[in-house]
Image 1 (cartoon, one colour):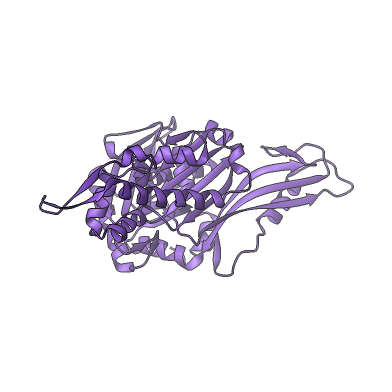
Image 2 (tube, one colour):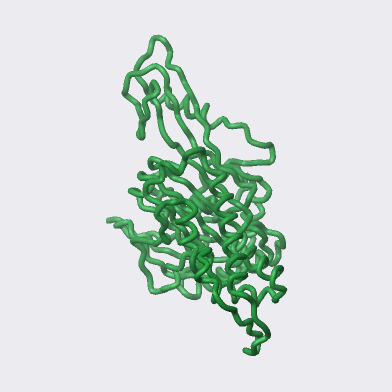
Length: 405
């Protein structure tokens, strides 16, 4: 009889460090047992800038998660991000020998090795190698063409790589708690596991995750990853823009952004003034609502432009399911309206389907990445024949952290 399994996802973000404990049931559904969260310190644009503070944040999140779910946590799946991480596509082409005309496993391995042999900078390391599509004599296949007749075999991969030392710093921070790291996952790829269903990936979908210090994205076309990456801009930059232009303190700028701001760009939503309230509840001034909204709209429109410019040419024409927004900043009033006008595509706030639990906050979009790691663990488990989790490191993970246990 199939057993339930417990997996733990850890996101060390710019504004929060979050640990989610999930129980994967035999039917594939996930029950969230606990969420441990603390405000991040020592993290800038998704990367560690003050190591002791970052490590203390992970320890605090661990203690909170264990206290809530009454589970002894020994290992985690770790989400990483940062502008140094890049997703690229590469193709391997293998021509079958003249005396052979049927594709077998050896031919596929040859094409796969060629596709994976992507030249990356010497200080970088591979994070992911995802098969996108196969082609046999220029005819596309979504599944392995083994057994078919043909002459020229292509394998398309999406390869994610980043600076080794920066990824190792995150792993080191976790291992010194001490916790084992089962696997390292590029954050937007984890997020997509809860933001999208298989049908949406097949139809074509773009996931944009806007957090405090970064904007992560992943594009699916015909069921496979076509692009992924990280832009070092997030909700904190909006707050800083408001602070610089209005001269109000950062804490007030953050509060106004959340309570009064609107990102849509609609002039009708910018009428009147907004009162600025101090920490004691007293009014200390006013700013024009139109100015506040223009600042928010300008920064978010620029962010969407940066994402669009990194996508393959004409890629948005293949996005049939729409654009899915997640992350803390996705809750910004009017942001969906702005995104719809910008992309001219259906816009959705990503939901976490087939997930239950007594903790209501796990459905908040700012937890999508951490919850997505639980889903990703299910995928690993299936690929490794039930050996996922529990400290099992794959080949790529061993190349990132070659120092043993």
